[in-house]
Amino acid sequence: MQIEFYKYQGTGNDFVMIDNRSGFFPKEDVKLVERLCNRRFGIGADGLILLENDAETDFRMVYYNSDGNESSMCGNGGRCLVAFANQLGVIEHKTTFIATDGLHYATVNDNSIVSLQMIDVVEVQKKDSYTFLNTGSPHHVQIVDDLEHYNVKENGAAIRYGSLYGQKGSNINFVKKVNDAEFSLRTYERGVEDETLACGTGATAVAIAMNATGQTDKTSIDINVEGGKLAVSFDKLGEHFTNVFLIGPAKFVFKGIIEI
Ligand SMILES: N[C@H](CCC[C@H](N)C(=O)O)C(=O)O
Image 1 (cartoon, rainbow, N blue to C red):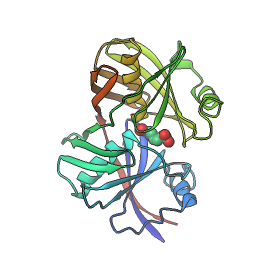
Image 2: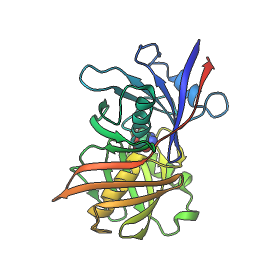
Image 3: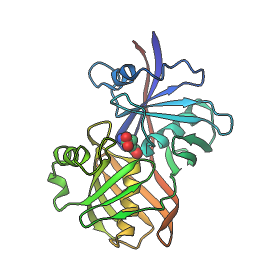
């Protein structure tokens, strides 16, 4: 069986994109998705995204982590899917699509900068040494001193598989404040089980967590990630965060055919 695929990356978080409007893709085949994401035996990616038809919106997003399992919302993947839909001619420069966490409004400009609306955040759990919130995916946010030399994989896995988050686990974000409008982030991603070069729902979680815990009073924040720079903006009403947008590049890298 041959599969046509497109490869995209959003600030270094990379994805296999498949046009599944015909419904041909075997969505239950965990081993196939894992193989397609494998960086030696397959195409290689942090995740795989299906673009599907939807009766009420421009398209449906189905997201899989590189372990082959379908998962929760992917912010960088959502941004890449908007750029992919534009490349296919499914949309022009703005869209509303459906994903596992509901409706998303987004725009894409001629420089492949995608602005993706994320879900509202109405609960931020503030603990002594960390913050936990859900921005479409679950995120643990923790400030560390020496982010550049921090062992993200070892320390991230210990928290993700520890007693705090049980079977479901969480994505783990380690943060350093640069200034009131800029933070640096490194993320251990659930379902990739490694550090990724960027995490969109993670960057969104960090921006909101830094405001919610008083590290900043800004509502437009730059997040430096290993693979580039993302911007997060939101409105804050009391402890609720709305009109949340994740903004950054979403680039087409190559397309191909894979024999499976
Ligand atoms: N690994 C995440 C989903 C992808 C998140 C990340 N790639 C993003 O850009 O938001 C999870 O299973 O919760």
